[in-house]
Length: 132
Image 1 (cartoon, helix red, strand yellow):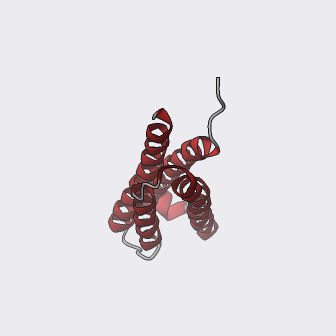
Image 2 (cartoon, rainbow, N blue to C red):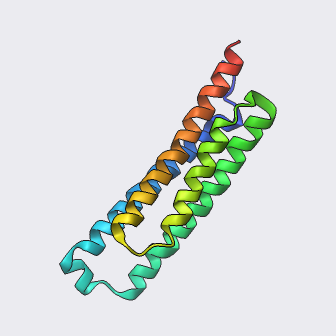
C-alpha cells in the first residue's frame, strides 16, 4: 500500500484545527453569555481564551500554508483551495477585530468553514490528480 502524501495528513490536521477553533469560539461565547459565568469569570481567564484564539489562528495559518501551497505548486495547480483558505483566514482575522459576540461568532464560523473546505478541496484535488 503506498504511503499517503504529506499534504494528506496535513490537510486532515488542518480540518481538525478548524473544528477545534470553531468549538473553542462557540464555547467561549456561550460561556461569556451565561450570566453566572460572566459574573464570576476572572479577567485572567478571558486572557487565556484570547491567547488560545491567537494560537489556533497561527496554527491554522501554518498548517494551511504547509499543506496547500506545496500541493498547488507540485501537484494539482487548482487555485480553489488557496482561495478558500485565504478567504477563511481573512474572516478569522476579521473576527478578532470585533467585540460583538454574534458578529464574532458568525465571522469565525464562516472562516473556519472556509479553511476546512480548503483542506477538503485540496485532498480531492490531490486524489483526482493521482487517480489519472
